[in-house]
Amino acid sequence: MSIELHPIGHVRSTYRQRGDAPRQGRLSDIVSEIVIDPPYQPGLFRIGERKHLFVLCWFDSADRRSLRVFPPHNPVEHGVFATRSPDRPNPVALSLVDLIGVKDGILRVRGLDAIDGTPVIDIKPYAKEIDTVPDE
Image (cartoon, rainbow, N blue to C red):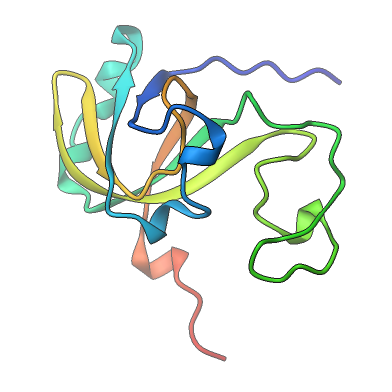
C-alpha cells in the first residue's frame, strides 16, 4: 500500500535547525506562524473561534530508520512508538498549540516545536470534551 500526503502549508519559526527547537513545544512560549497555501485557506473558515489546535507536521529531517531511542527525560532505551521522538519511520509530528490569531491565511501559534520550513499536513481543533482523559 502507498500513502500520499500533500502539505497544506509550512511553518515559519525562529528555530532554524533541530537543536534549536525545544524538546516539546508546550514547554516554550515562542510564537511561530503556520502559513497555509492559498488553495487550502477556505478550510480556515471559523478557525479563529478556537483557542487550541492540533497541528500535524511532517518532520522531514527526521531519521526514519530509528526504532529505538533514548528519551531525554528517561535515558533508558525505548521503542520509538513508546516515545515522542521526532525520529521514527513516518515522522508525523503532533503538537497541541495555542492559537493566538489568524489573518490572511497565516496562523500565529504558541507551543509549536517545528523548525522553519517544516511542512504542515493537517490541522484539527482541540475539543476538551473528547481530547481530555479523565483522571483514573
